[in-house]
Amino acid sequence: MSIQQSNYPRYSAVVATYNPSDYFFTTLESIVNQSVPPSEIIIVDDKSEKIDLASIENSVPKSITLIVKSNKENMGASYSRNLGSSLATTDFLVFFDDDDYSLIDRAKIHLEAFVDGSLVSYVSSRKTYPNGYSVEHLNPDINPYLVTPQLLVRKLLFGKSYPNLIGDIPSATLAMAKSAFSAVGGFDVKLRRLEDADLAIRLSLQKFTFSWSSKVAVERNATARADKGGLIETTHEFLLLEKHGWLLGWWRRNFVSSLISLRAIYFGGVKSVSIIALLKMLFNPFTYFVILFRFSRFKKRMHHDELQVSQ
Image 1 (cartoon, rainbow, N blue to C red):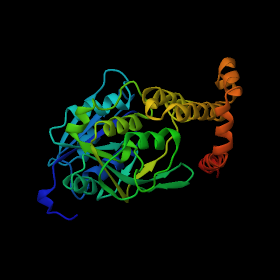
Image 2 (image 1 turned 180 degrees about the vertical axis):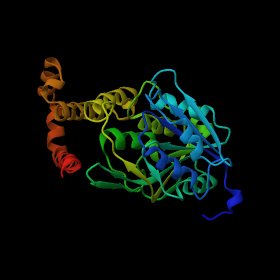
Image 3 (image 1 turned 180 degrees about the horizontal axis):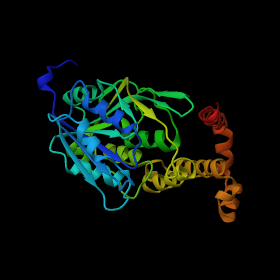
Image 4 (image 1 turned 90 degrees about the horizontal axis):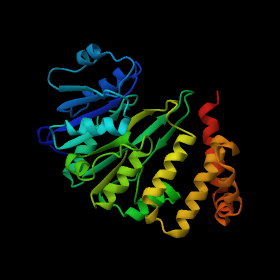
């Protein structure tokens, strides 16, 4: 929809950062230059080894309130985003990752979704890897919509596609009403990965309205770090399954458990699972169901991983 500039709701830009690269200032520039600029930018530094606070202050115009907080110890992105959100003085939050670039109308898309009645809003994105390989994560246009928790969990854990009902849920593309964020307690600080999936599930359980936009509004930069990818992801997939698996039902839960175990072997080799776990997999019929019904997806994943590192 189209509304007058003065009628857009005020919002806070929340940025969690840890050892930011020089690209951080490009991220900051994209926030400042939004067609509907934020009322305030809240940056939470998760105990970086070095951060240039003076340059950050010089990058934000006086018309935008800048709040910078530093954690006394490394607490993770969930804690940092929660802290930043608690400091917000507006009714709406837009989350920005410190190594991504948001296109000029990103905030505008979120705010129009809020005006239309959504409390949780996502935009589409393009993810680019260091070698130049990129993948577009395109959402359907949905606004506003009550997401069925069972369908969302099936998409996130079971891998069932619902192309016209549910889009992608990375925190780098997320904005939401502060009231909804507070109602579910924000991100789970015990999760260092997949905290965005967990948050979306809890929001759906509380029947908050969601929206997705098909417009690519975030350019995401894939970075390799010791705290993400591979076995880190599968460990958190098991945590997510333990927390929300009850929404899947008995056989889907067992299927997903076997799927995650096979993914762990793919990323870390046989040594990544214990002998007992390996024997359980060999004698578990769900293991063979996964191999049978997900073989084509495994091939696509392997091809995707190859393209990330190819020259």
